[in-house]
Each structure stands twice: as C-alpha cells, then as structure tokens.
Image (tube, rainbow, N blue to C red):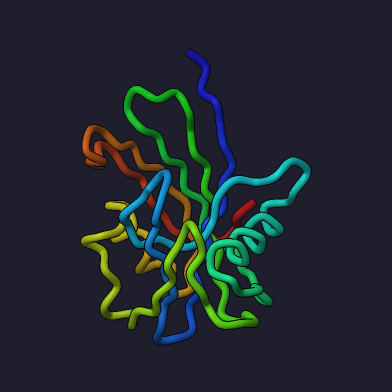
Length: 158
C-alpha cells in the first residue's frame, strides 16, 4: 500500500526562558499542550502556513521564523505519513489570546508539561530549546505509544 504524505507546520514561540504552548481544545490532539500549527492551504508555502496558523490559533503575528526541525510521524495501521516542519519564533506582535481551537499559556522552560503533551515532545523539545536543528521519525502504536523512533541533529534542513 502506498503511503500518502501530509505536510504540516508546528511553531513554538520561545522568549527565553518562557515558551508559549496552546491547549488543543478540539480535533486531532485535543486535550494536549502543543505548539501552534496545522495544514497548508492550497498554494501556500510552509512558512506562510506556519505564520497563518499561529495567527489563527493564538492571535499573534509572527515576525521572526526559523526552521528547527522536520519530523515524520506514522501511526500503526494508518498509511498516512505526517511530515511536520517545526519552527521557532522569538519575535511576534500582539498578545496571545484564546481561539476556538487553542488556549495559549506561557510556561517556564524548566516547567514544560511533557506529561500532557505528545509523547515524542520529550525527545526533540530539548534540542529545539538549545537552538539545534534536527530530523527524525516516530512510529506510534495503540494509545499513542512510541514503537520506534529515530532522531538526530542536522546542519541542513530542506
């Protein structure tokens, strides 16, 4: 069976030592803290999608945007691969505000709520916070258990 690939964005606002995460209120990942992101609109670049998603989900305009990682996610029994482009931003305009999809909240970098985030976050988030670039792949089984993972630092991201 051929695997379908879906390109997604994820942007984490990081004003050292604070990190802005959003509690997902509905849809895929509901009930978890996460960065802001989602699907690309037709004809939209990955960077433009990242900016739009942050604006829609957190009510702020991202000024600076740096790609820090690309991770592929697969879920056992699902032929779709989620290719997530992970961005860092430390310059934005506006005040984070709740949307229909996300409720933003600031966390100190030493108090990130990994127990209520996706289980892969604990592996790549430290690299992200250190300013490193990375790529990887995670295979999830039942109950979002990680069955297989690869993660490595890289100098170049597409």
